[in-house]
Image (spheres, rainbow over the protein chains, first blue to last red):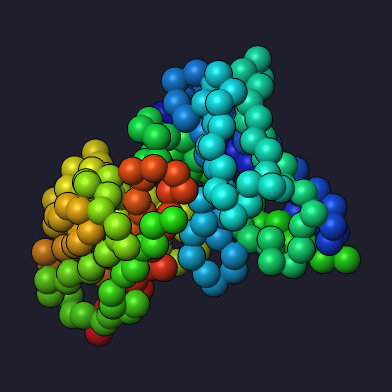
Length: 117
Length: 107
């Protein structure tokens, strides 16, 4: 059973870069697609982007200019960087694993990131 | 980009009732449609993919149907543990947009 765990700062200052890492256990990072999804408090889900172990990526156009998703196969981890954050980026950030592109089979527990000075 | 809508935005039903949630895509997406359940304070969970394929371990009272632009999620007999918000998501092509959600509670 694939398990995912997000890690990273829970508080980021406006205009800075949000950085999160997801550690994958119970499965090989080369077996799935990997994604980030976020959910502002009390609101719905927003897909951020995905990466394959080869490094190929696809990002939500609404965030594309600010997002980078990368993978480290040696550590069984993948990461999210979101630059120039504002209060609107405050959300629970989930990392996720996908057997089929777009279908989210495995979810991390989520981590709340607050953007505030 | 393709937009996803859901109706109703919320509903209240009695235990044992049949509940139907509708999801509509602004353009055809074939059967590239998934449904997720998010219980209060919990992580979303995949219920259905390919519009009608039940994820392993999901109770058979959940079913999905539809193709093209119109889809439904049906709970054949609502149970107390089904209180949740339900999201549809299209995945025919990126961006993999979610619907706004339908909140289901018990009357």
